[in-house]
Length: 177
Image 1 (cartoon, rainbow, N blue to C red):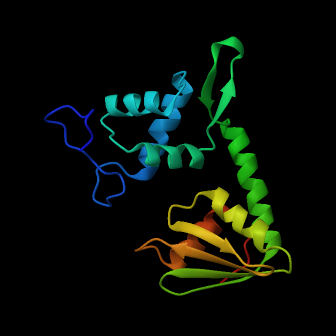
Image 2: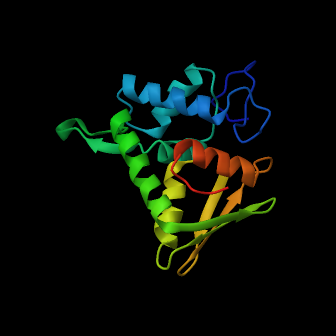
């Protein structure tokens, strides 16, 4: 348990699947805190999260901020603070990533651990980038092949059927059965 957690407080490792808060709930709280506070450092954000009963590591926070597309912006002589894109910007980015994915993929197949996405020649990098930027909870990460294939590693308990269902929910125009 970290030194800064008061006695009597239960330490929750957010990587443990049995924790009270899900990643999605935690991301919503981080987003709300960023929109309501001027947060200048990750240490400051960790303190704000702890005030909400959420105890995570700096590494987990860093991954969460990346997933939320949070970045430090300048405030002139007042230094820097974290900011997140507006909901409209996020929706537009998702549309662009969806277009990249739908334009570039040829077929999708899977087994228990991996999804294999065959792409048109030269489209593997944009398709992998689109998947990474969609932030699908069940996808651990992607590897783009040299030219026309993308591998996506799946989290335990998340199936290829789940992957395809989530992808179709975001992009109904996806023509895959």
